Picture 1 (cartoon, rainbow, N blue to C red):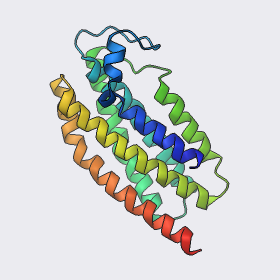
Picture 2 (picture 1 turned 30 degrees about the vertical axis):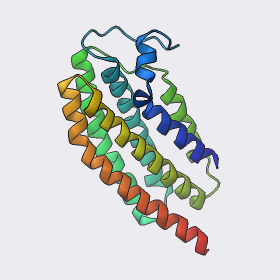
Picture 3 (picture 1 turned 90 degrees about the horizontal axis):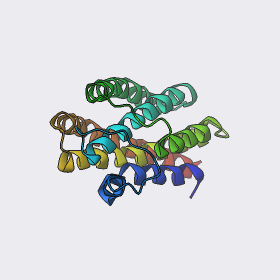
Picture 4 (picture 1 turned 135 degrees about the vertical axis):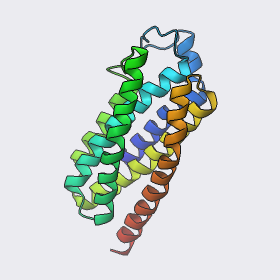
Length: 193
């Protein structure tokens, strides 16, 4: 498994962390990362906001990079869509966070994983490697993002966050399907050359 695939899997596990009980561990104080006091938000809601905010940033940054580096039209179009859809999503989350008086953790574990993926994409040996790695990371990210949204819909407490997750989920499920198709096309292209 190459570095991008491992990082994508790692990010996927981190995004799914609330489903795996990480929120409960943080609630009991076993996390190393300080959490701002917020009586208005449950641990699930706080984790959702922090992870979704960082995820939107990653999608915008990696999408902009793919718009520049990718040569396959379908990948460039997909990347443009990620920039176009995640910028407004990030803005909506920022408004929700401002309403709650919160800021995303500045050095969250996800931030390090996203930075590592971005670095790896920036250093890709050639266009083929970049496109393969970008689409692999997108498939893993989109699957994890869908799980994060589903978790918020199912276990979240804040009605605004639940509605945001509920209304965003169909778009993300579409991104999963599109990313999987493009990644499959890239893989088939690589196998025939």
